[in-house]
Length: 231
Image (cartoon, rainbow, N blue to C red):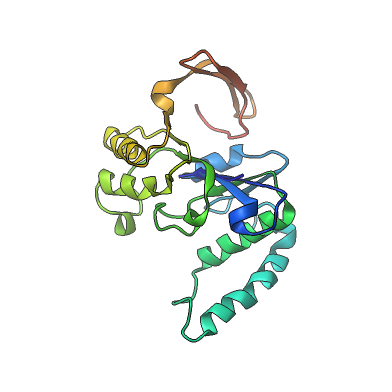
């Protein structure tokens, strides 16, 4: 399945096409990617978290993914009339390679992070299991707009009908835009700031934290993410 973090992807044992075998979770911020470190998870994050590859499975199979997709891409470019114009960007090619490799590897979950914005991003072709938007603030204004509302609208573009959403938009204007988009689509939206609280937070010498996440209905989950930093 796929989670969209502005996303995570889980692969079903079905015919290997992006639409049938690749379900995803999509995410909006790269700061969450170090926490997604478990067997069976295939993360695709920006910027590069390690080495020269944005995906863990690529560290061994980058060349195979490139070889599998270079000919189809060139065929699309050379077709008459051209079915792709202009040439796909570096990020678009790498995104396609990630999807191919996740399907080939039959990963249980793929965490797919949006590259820029969301609505028009290459990763937005996925239909995720859940869409997650973290903090929204001024960034990439040249492409996303010069107001919080316009930026939030672009990032809320990863929300899809029938796909639950989660957001932590600390800025009130951004939160209202995300909530309005969820209502328009008729999808459930979890507001982390109001629906959950953190209890019994403990720090460790390695820079990590452990805490209990408690929902308003009493549900509680003890967590110790691999993401280091001040909580």
